[in-house]
Length: 277
Image (cartoon, rainbow, N blue to C red):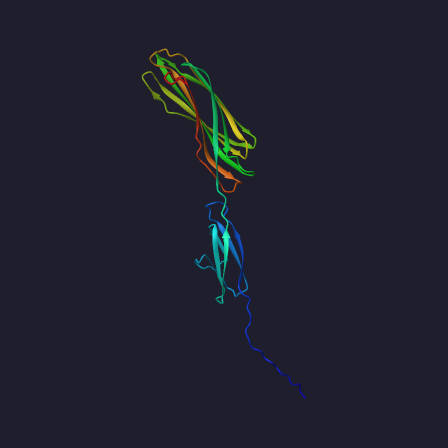
């Protein structure tokens, strides 16, 4: 004989674990950047899920970027229309620090007259405020040296000014002079009843990197000429020196910006009888 079996069938509902969220966020890096992020991990529920923050548009991705600092909330809806909302806070970033290149200079004068004039400039370029550890700034120091000769022609005799100049640059501490690029340009000339004027411009670009320390240099300029054979037509020369900054960049510093504006420094050396200084 066979064996009889009795089956008891129970009815009811399956229990589904409620939706819950795990949030992983990053704060704003610097004040005003509005670059907080949020990654949402859904626990339980039925995929696929849709995501939104602060009641905005829904998306299928669980990642949000460019979130401003402050209080926010994220809402997730699963395929069964179950909903969960959770609050989060994006921390505010630190205030940005602006760094700039600063020049200092001192000028000493030698004999200054209508036939001989000399000056020496000692200069430095440094970063203000001091850079944090691991940061560096790279920039160009643009040196322009202009020689202008106001010459006289008297009875077939041309009298000219003569020029002697020299310059140096030295890296001190955690500073490096990466390259030196010189150029020379002959300026246009003009003529006058007494003679004329001519000149030349010497330009040098120093590319430097500072992670501390500073760069320093000297500029020596001398102008010489004979006394004019024609009292109504002076012979004189002028040297104009200037230093400026360009191409400033910074690396290795968070929440940092740089100023591209630095007040140039200048020195003028002349035997011009109307401008002797």
